[in-house]
Length: 141
Image 1 (cartoon, rainbow, N blue to C red):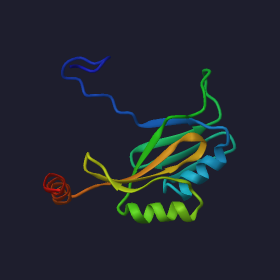
Image 2 (image 1 turned 90 degrees about the horizontal axis):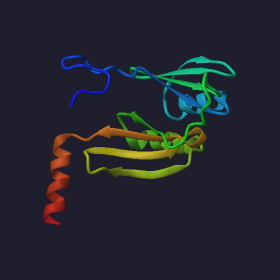
Image 3 (image 1 turned 90 degrees about the vertical axis):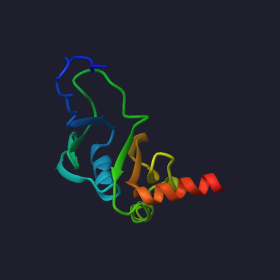
Image 4 (image 1 turned 120 degrees about the vertical axis):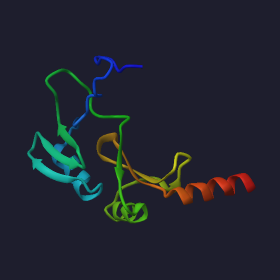
């Protein structure tokens, strides 16, 4: 299947940024910097820009077209130590939605409530040996 808007042989277009519509830009930016560990690049009352690896996360109170505030969005933040990220978030007052768990798709994950209905998922890919061990435990257990 060829993605919409491309022809056979075309590269899939990257998505370099996402703009989340939030009511309180400074509060959301501070949360994403201090709790989720994103790098704050620009902060203004009506606009913020944060780096999340190669993805740019922009925050705005409105857009050029009518739109609703962010909801139903999960920002997946890859970390080296999920437990440490979760404890840092907990110490900062974040509400924990999912304690540390191993997923069926080979990651370790914990989730917190982010600003304005956005969920933050701290995750790390599990080494293949850990996934195989877990699968063996499920088969034998």
